Length: 407
Image 1 (tube, rainbow, N blue to C red):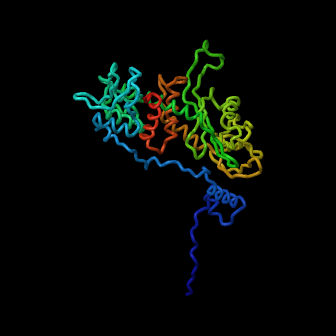
Image 2: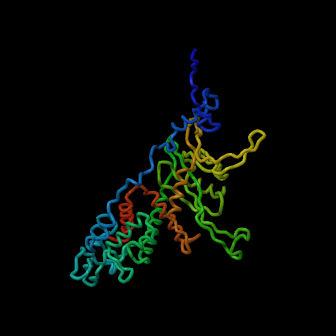
Image 3: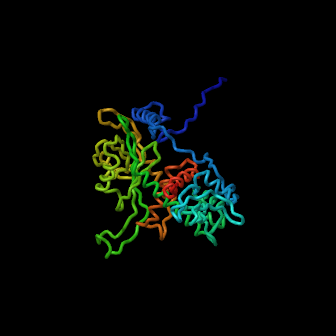
């Protein structure tokens, strides 16, 4: 009897009906599939940030000081450490802040007392604390008074973005002392950011074009009484800001933008004329109509951040939101550049700010506190990935240099 033999057929998974799996598993590539593969190759070859600068790795960062070290320092050692790190200035050789005539002597240890400076002028002889006129450190007595080492440790926790309530729980430091340091720190940062922002510029030089992202964000709102409103139909006041970030440079600029919803054309024209006009900028934005304004020296590209219904042939279909897309941009002069259009960096910047914002009965729409908090978060965004202890030392050195006059 003969034996019938046959080859066992190989088992195949069913081909997917859609998506990348279908494109890869189909035996004969169609024209559409080839186009998708070409798009995938172009996607990998086109970097989002054309300057090549990558975001810093915060998880690998080490700061110069630790909480255990700072909180264990005595008064004299804490003064020396803070002076070395730039967080506390020296009054030695400066003009006496009391008589405005004498010269301040060196820091001396007093028997049974804390270290002090002293004016050398015969008619003054005033003792001066190292914390005199300092915005962060105090020599207060009572429940709010703490040693310099404890205050330095408290500042380190605040710079590490530890919540104020958590600092109070784990250190048992008076909550008013913590809130005072936090408030003064935000005011010092606000002043620095506003002074620095006036000197900033966007765009490239010569034949270089830079990518700039723009987007607006709303932080708070409040109801205005009808009798106090300029327009009876507009009784809501909004805390809305617009921000711009140049890819490869972490320093964003944020200007206040009145009104809810997308930015208006008149408001955007003032901002664009001030910061972008004639600066060789490829502008990335969402689909707000105001950003389509024609600006000399600016090429615009936008993405749609919401799901919308569009007509394809005779059918209406839902089009998914687009956050990043590839586009060939034609620059003035005919040169073409392939870029990824999107607002990912500025969106992450706004999220960074909102995570550090504490909106309450004091920090609300139109208040100085909410503006100071936004500026403080902006300062942290500029210096993310750096040692915030040393960066704050540089900030304090600059701030106190305007207060202490050398003789």
